[in-house]
Image: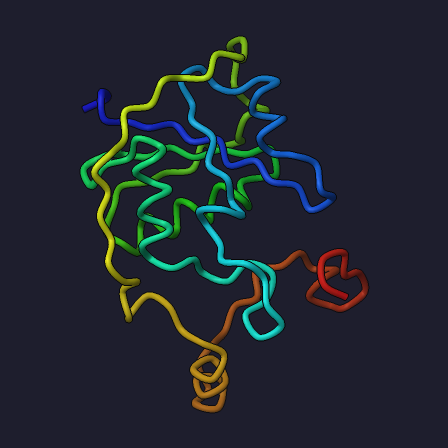
Length: 169
C-alpha cells in the first residue's frame, strides 16, 4: 500500500555540515528529515563510542514525529553511499518493521528535488525495548571470536587496515 510508504532523508556529515540544511536545500518530494544524532543514536561516550544505540523510547518518539507507524514501510536515503540511511533501515528491520534503502541514494533521483517541507501527521510507532537477539555488546563479540565465530568489520578497507582513521583516531 503506497499510502503507507514514508520516504526518509538521513543525511549526516562527519565534517560537521548540517544534514538538515542539505535537506532544506533539496530533498526527494515528500521526504521527511531524520536527524541521526537525535533519533538514531545516543550521545557519544568513551565506553559507548560515537553513535551508540538510542534508548528504544527515543527512537520510537523520533519515528512517530516523522509520521512512521508500526505498519508503515520506510524508504531511506542519504548522499553517502547509504551508510547513514542504512542505520535507520537496520534499526527498523531489527524491530520487525518494513524498511528499504534507496539504491544509489539522492544522487540517482531522476526528478527535480523539492524544498517543500511536508506537513507530518504523527505516527503510532511503538517500541519498548530493543530485541535482545538483535544487538550484542563488546564482551559478547569478544566471546564469539574466542569461539571461532566470524566477525565482519564493515569499515572501508583503509580504515580496517589502520592506514587512515578520519573518525576516531
